[in-house]
Amino acid sequence: MRKLTKLFSVLLVLTLLVGSLASCNKAKKLGKMIDGANAALAEQPYAVDIVIEYKADDADMIAALEALSTPSVKINVDGDKFKARLDLAYGSDENYVTYTFIDGTLYTEWREDGNTVRDSRPYSDEDKAALRDSFGEGANIGTEDFEEVELKSAGKVDRITCTKIKDAPLNALIASLEADLASFDADVAIKNATLDIEIDNGRYNVVVFTCEYFITTSTDSYSLTMTYSSKFNYTKELEIVAPIME
Image 1: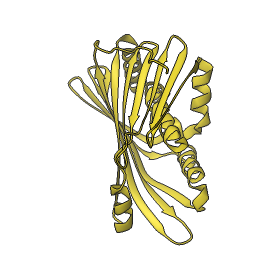
Image 2: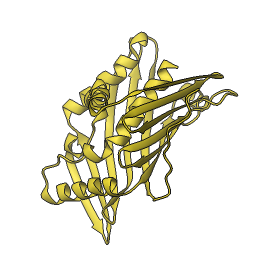
Image 3: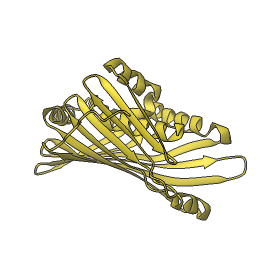
Image 4: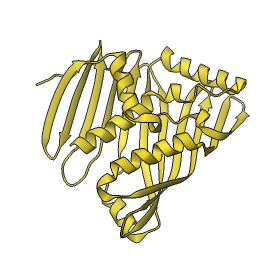
């Protein structure tokens, strides 16, 4: 259950911080565009659908990936309130984690292998910052972390493409993954990291982070491509209420 909860926490942090991730770019036009998209997130309720996909060429790695379901996340945000759920089904059981934040209280429910655990506690801005910081720079990848940032606009649609990730954020990503694989004594390399942001009519539409992982252990070497896609939907029909804690 700890692994499932940690995975969800990473996804939640990445998604809720997406507005601030790209706000530090020095280009005036790009900075104004990002600031406007961030402001739009605060003006109305919205939902984010996240899908993480992995691809590999190695037959053993393909078989291992096929044994896992693609994790998906649904996050609803309305002002200071949010509700987020990660569904990660494997075997015959329903496995998920949900976080609901209302009026300064964070409600957590996780279910794994037929067992359900519920918890609630006060949750401040300092708690959010501590959670973010616990994942280091790897949880804060944005446009300022890339050497090349290209902006293309067509009508009301703006597309930002970021390539050639800088050494500091790259090393943070590698260190984070190596820490997770410490029991395997694995060496990790990351190549071809890209960040694509689409802003439609001044609002975030799609954010996609893609990279290639190269993992080497004492006996084997593996490579796989990860694509982390976030799709934003804006709606006023979001109901976020405190769950029943029994």
